Image: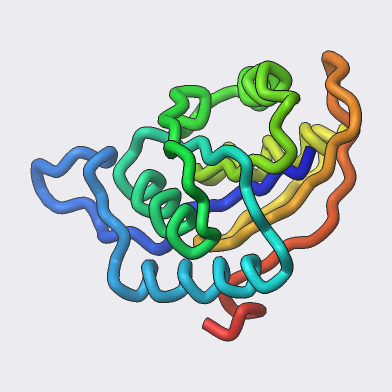
Length: 161
């Protein structure tokens, strides 16, 4: 399975009385997100499933991914991708979807840094997943503890955004 960790793009700052969950992507965040995803599409990324945190900025990121990557399925909200979610819970969700060939997860830091390290079988490694970045990890087995392979990591700067 190809697992893509897609950190949401740049989001607006919280305003007085605004819930963190309601923060939207900025125009610049959307632009950089599209640039990263266009490079990914050119590299052949074709998700069979897209899961997203239910927070607005992550959902908007997932919708841009669905559009640019020509995904025709439903974008699925997954509470395991909420900020602070445990990597093991995300892994358990992925294991339940092992028939999928390629899954994009849209979510947040620091969860995605912890998740990347966990999926690589090296939970003590520190991974800094930048806003608007896309990270690919491949997993062949669905044992209780993953041992994935990092294939690539694309930041907005590398995508020319």
